[in-house]
Length: 215
Ligand code: BG6
Ligand code: MG
Image 1 (cartoon, helix red, strand yellow):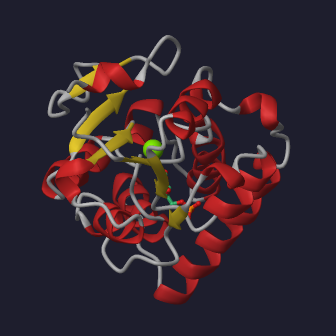
Image 2 (cartoon, helix red, strand yellow):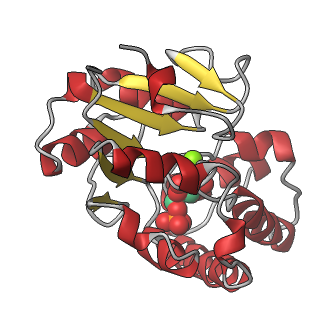
């Protein structure tokens, strides 16, 4: 019998590759303000809320904006981001994700989403994945972003599962820190060198099985 009774998934970069659209939309905002945003700088924004991301980007460019202007720019970025996301189809679900979620269902392991994104439901609908999740904790529900554990603790509560019996799947450093702070098994999706704090790191879900989480 496995210790793990529930799995909580981040969305962007774990279920679907939306990071490229976030990057494109943020880069356009930076360009409009007279500077560029590199892919490396974009790494820092993974798992970070929209308004916090904007603050990081403005600091990179050395630009100061009024609160009103920040809200306007962030809204514009989001409209652009969603336009790009509308190109997605169910085919854009990352390889191996559906098979792994089907395996969890088959094993009666509970499944929830823990994302900083306020667009989580729209995106899950777009890729036809909404029905896989028993609970969705998204950017509209949380008051403290990753690396705070709130997002995953709320997910565990919704699924009536103690944190020690939950596994979290995350592609962002802030997300791994959030999972660890919540007392959950942290599974990094990506590179070991970046996600060094995770308990397990895999490049993706292809060939990954529930038994790989350990006993
Ligand atoms: C996270 C992404 O999942 O959601 C971040 O990794 C993003 O890049 C954050 O900023 C908030 O997303 P949204 O969709 O509410 O702007
Ligand atoms: Mg992510």
